Length: 217
Image 1 (cartoon, rainbow, N blue to C red):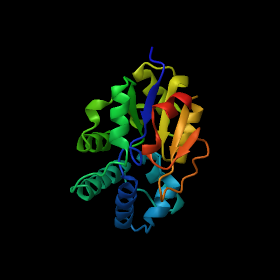
Image 2: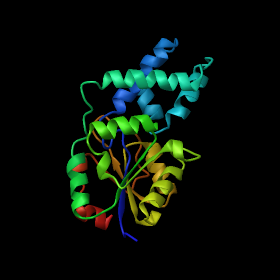
Image 3: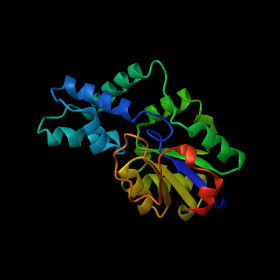
Image 4: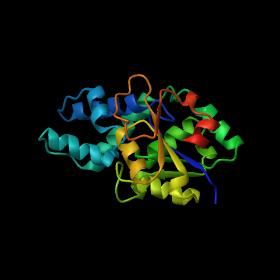
């Protein structure tokens, strides 16, 4: 059994897409008579599965919610249109993945995004084939901040949870990693105002992460 594995969140860790998701959600909400600021939406709901975001927003706004499937389909079409020109990787993501692969460290993705987003984003970034396992919140009973998705990812990787390190940019993700008994590196990039205090260590860029940091975390 490997003695170390790295589990990446996707949006805001591998791909610079947090703002795109929030903008797409705001556009859908606008179409349904709800005005929401993208920064506020991201701050409140970053890291949560989309299936939980829509009911929370419509409930808070005291508005009747359309069928959740139609909202999710509508958002995916908006998102696809927004990323037609490409999806930007987070700085340092590709180099870090190369380092881990060279050193034979198993790597996985555990994302709250729906499977179609994971497929789109990782394929666009040309990273999908590099991961040993990919896990979506749709595969587990409870989304982040519950530990389910990270425990599922560890199981797929064949690594004990205590030997897994999660890289996260959202409060719900750091709490989920902690609940799973995993160490966590919080990515507090400029403009990310999430409370990452539950993380074992906080960095401002993936470029800070090296083999020594991972081994001594």
